[in-house]
Image 1 (cartoon, rainbow, N blue to C red):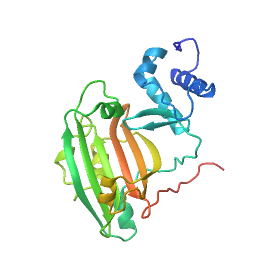
Image 2: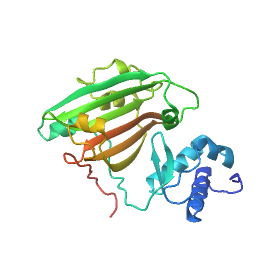
Image 3: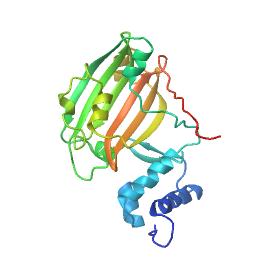
Image 4: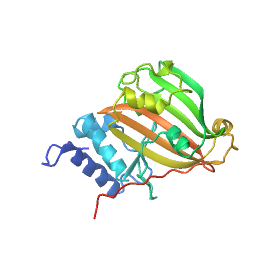
Length: 243
């Protein structure tokens, strides 16, 4: 790879052009994994922030998909909807006139996260991460399994909260400003643990929303929200700014 200092365009645009060029030439085929951000930084002679911005923009444009703890991949040829907004499932459930309750399955601090989790947060050294697993019920029927990994450098006191009485969503919104969000939605069969917690059968279809959030350039949370496919749908309505 060559450095990108010989062009007048912004550096992040050059990184985008480099990635798209490798995809267009077939060097990086569909579903192939891209080099890590550190490898791209070293090879292209730009900052990590520049590489991160380029990859995030290419992801939002549908060229790439980024999977928490795994890496960045060339997107497969399938439609993806970006019209999913940050929402609070408790508010959604109550807005339908239903009764909500939450059950906390896990609330802990992981002092030494595994390498995949460190990569998901883009930590360059080993740092602790807070972890929660919460089941959300609508009229006593489980509809969402919420797993969150939280950066304690940005969010203090997370593992000391009672998330049966306050929403993780509300606590995080109050703890650190949300400046950027990344979504990836998949339809996947339920594993044994997911099936048990959601009261469905193993291999039943689930909607899985992978969500990563940023405060400025720093990753605040890495989340997986799993919905029982037969009980929930995801969608949004927006005002369009065009004529």
